[in-house]
Image (cartoon, rainbow, N blue to C red; front, side, top):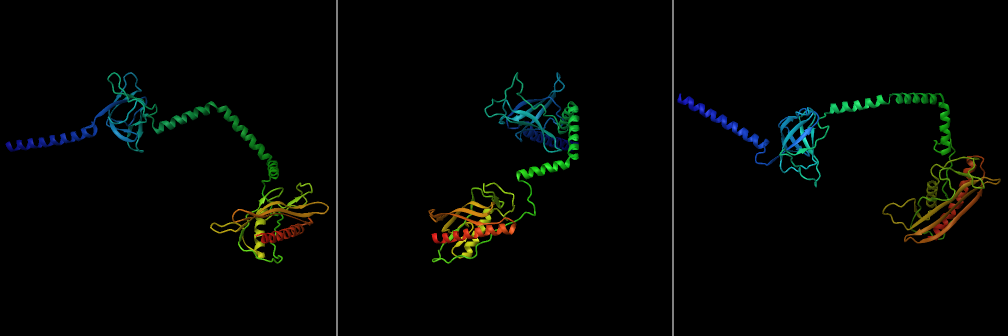
Length: 374
């Protein structure tokens, strides 16, 4: 009997020790343990479904305490008061707001504390009660309730504006019917606007005229050395950069003949002049300046006129100014080139021949003058 009594006492002592150890651990983790705790209250006007005694309290996402009590108000059934035990070092201010957050889709809710200005005063208690923190009015509203509320508001707006919406839909239906019945006229109006603004697509049958580089040059006494860069010319004056300019003596655009360049006129002129310099063999010439390449000269050209003038005796006229700039930025020479040759505008071949004849003459003069100047 004595042995059985001794074993019973030992068992009871072991159970009591284990229970005390569990209680001590719980006290350390939940009741504050060695940390100093401060109590606050938060009052909610909506349901706090899922919030329990012992639920975590987060401040800006960091756990700082737990809920120690949840109470219903006897005066107002809608009010729920939560008492929180929070680490005293937590910077809770008078403007810190309490809310309810859900950690993921399936986890239990937690009470969250957010915000608070740095210069705001600490939360203070009244009548020996824990400080009451303001809460979000919609804190206890879950996503389903929020969606239901939004749909209810939308339904109210639709009901309030039922008649105007019916009228609007009827007007749209009438307008679409008018457009359907007059689709041909609408297409004509849009085509007219494209022609007025010049934004319509170019016809595939548009006449195309190109320039040919000069291939033969007169001999020159001294072949210059160095490298020449010829950038894309600037377009000034009454130059049509995209179309072949056919103008009247007064300078107005003529409809006697219409044609286009294969590219913008400035790029076509740049390419053909570079090819002409290469054919002459006088200089090493480039259309642009590659990085790291030494350039001795630059040839700068401003296009002033590049056109066919219609009259009793039509002419092809080309005019541009040219400057040669040295390595140090000094202008070595400047000259105005102007040429006019007889032309006819009966067909594509005659217009192309007249422009190429004028281009051949003026580019020959340009290449020879450039080589002599440098």
